[in-house]
Picture (cartoon, one colour):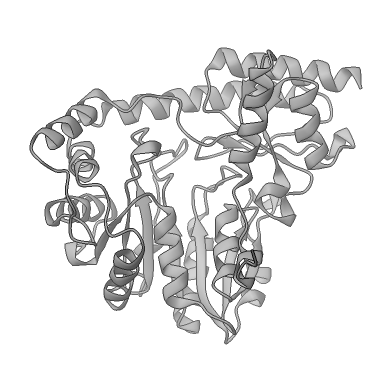
Length: 387
């Protein structure tokens, strides 16, 4: 069977492949500490689960309008408006099955051969994959450890060209855990306005801020009209399997993106949408408690990593990932991932899974218990000391 040429341009998310390898070893009797996959290890709060059950009992088992149920779009718009301090029209909200469709639909609607899309590197691998699949040219925006895993302003200016169609921002960042300072956001806003480019602002980790409040690029002049704000419920409410994401789109993109929804997934599950309203409008205690626990885990992990010879780990300001520098070990990122799993029984990810500028680093998710993190640190330390 001959596949279409475009399939050769479509990448993958190696976190799931790494998880499969780790699970296979576990099935063979190996003890594995899982620090690779990027999802909260908490259960969805009970009041959200109950809302889904109520919705099923009430008959929310059918198609909905492609952009989402009106009451759900209104609830999301009100919540975003409260957080970002501007009046968000519900008509600009589109509900999707997870956050990835917001990325894919935005890129498909805007980018084609001859266009350039600037994206963070190290960064979520699906950005580059989708840009290549759409036929556009991905332009990596390097995130430097010396700048807190943020871009160099001069390098950033040099990336923008007359062909720049879209700039992707992810803060807090996956995999680095970095938070983009306001100065960098302001610079990107100015460049986007000058280049007449759209910004895709991936804010899925907005609640996972450990130092200071979240700042959205939409606060800067002209950006409410040219920003696609990507968010969802997967991380904040431990609802990864529910597949409820959303985008707040510029008016010009609402109709074409709605058509993409209609042509691909039809709509997001009705009962899950109803549960989303309860998540957004209900008590936020579970979110605050989860973030506080993640901060405690972060502190345990970073302190432990920095106590291991030949590893240095900057303190992540957000998300639930650490991105330690492992160049002192003499191992490549992939060799470190392979050795950590095979020799130490710790599942983590090579930095190169997140772009070429991830060489010399690994990503460690602290979405596991403090005891599990301490055990992983012990194993990694002993493995490296025995080499």
